Length: 224
Image 1: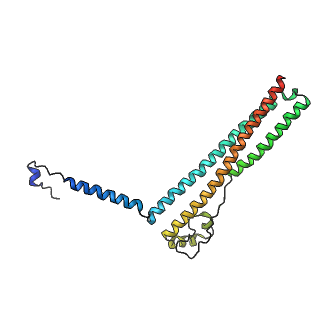
Image 2: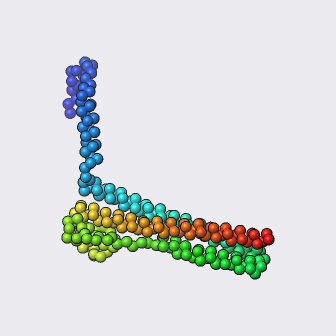
């Protein structure tokens, strides 16, 4: 390798800075490239990465919905435990008169019905959903029709050798189409789960009000 130093460098002469026009031209080229990138279409591999990021976000939403449903079940268990303590660890229910006991038992029956109803709603929120994509008028002979190499329900319809042959024949456009279809199915599943979780928390709010009303009724009857 040649380590010789130019004469200008050896005698301490500084290299002149590039003119300001070069910096302005470089900044202009960078700005033009940014504007052109903002308006161009994604290429195949950029679309593949963007779809994979969207799938990750959809799976995170599913996990968040599961955590919300489990937290609602914990709160529901706490309300039921408070009701059991109120009914078995105090002498108030046994000291009630006939009509008072009927009021309390009626409200308790309503609470039990609501609790069972929204326990089933919690099961619905946590139940594994099955949403097959609706491809509609998408013709199977089109060039970008999904070939079923990623989604597990499509994968298990082939044996291992046929699945490997499908991967050898698939094109990037078909793979991106399958990613888009899978993301669409996950969004449908997330919407169904979010509706179920919202209904679950509505029931939890109703159970809390019923339990508070029951406790207030018992205290009122005991005080009277």
